[in-house]
Length: 550
Image (tube, rainbow, N blue to C red; front, side, top):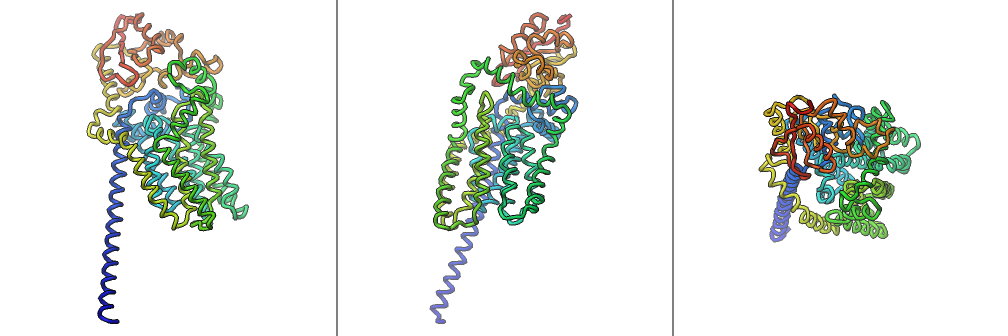
């Protein structure tokens, strides 16, 4: 080899070495930027969640965090949902009780967000083997417009089933794409799916397609292997995950079904039919529900995600025609996800009236479908997907950051958190009662979190807010016998047995009118109290005087 050739070879090696170092540092910079970006987004999400306005639904879901297990669900208090959500918020209150009732519950919702994002990233990464697509999937969930509203911000049961549904579905799909599925992970998949259904009844839609697919996927295994390695572990996991629901169901089937099923098919619909005018734009019919579905599935970040899915579908079809599939066919798994998505979409139209949170479950299936389609694409064609994913992520962030960034700024003022204001309101209420030497007794209100934050007693009949009270006129006597509730015509008897120490109203004038009549008739004193205002109105506190009710 000549000297010239040696020099050229050395130069080439040196150039390749420098290029390798540049790529290494570039990858490191991208990784650091990604981690920093995710941390900022999570911080912004936490800030938005903690400053999100108080919602009536939280009066149903958060109080069990404190009164359990002293008061029993269904038996001692009205609770029209499956039990997992109540126990979840109870456990959060045990761990984060120093943040108050609402603060601990909202912190639990944030942890659910983290779990949901991790579940989406893990599932899409295992299926697609692409960090870029996994990151895109996480951003797509963060940019889903319905999840940035009440469905994903308030302490309710809307977000709770989603991480478990994604984990259950993801584990099943990943394992059935392997030559030898691990029965232990199939067991966990079944348990997660049941935990999701025990958190919200509508999450049961994830179970039938997976249960049916257990008899079909993977394709070429013996019947014995299928039964012992897939079907039985999936069923066993499902039974374990369903134990909390079975506990309440078997303890008193009529009581449980009266709350979880009969309420939603009877008095709930009757109430909204009679009071539809109180909620302008309420979706009582198919037309209104279609508008809600369109806003959830085909607007904002969800529309961008749907567009990317169409592109990936087209790319997978093109690759299929050329015979260049990269990782083998996963048609069965695609059918499972499509079946879950379709079933969730169809059943979201069943509840009446329709609300935006009913349409969020299909959204978590779409990133998984995208990962399966991406898996079908060959290595060369995947390079064409990169700019599409990057551009889509950029647009998603552009339209989402204006809603998230104020949350990041709010982290500097934790005293302005909704939970902090609620705690101060409870403390002000307690001080008002103490300063006026109010006789002992519970506080009557449709906003029970205010007195509960201060450790004050409430009526079990109002432990779920207004939800039992408002359906009383629309509930027949046979069904009402299963509910711990009181209506307007029963307030006199309830207060006659145990007069309220105070009555807090000002949030729903029509429903609270009988309470206002009661305080006027019984010489209750109105006491001005700060920190009792929220999106529903200014709180008015009336306290019992020595001569009242005597």
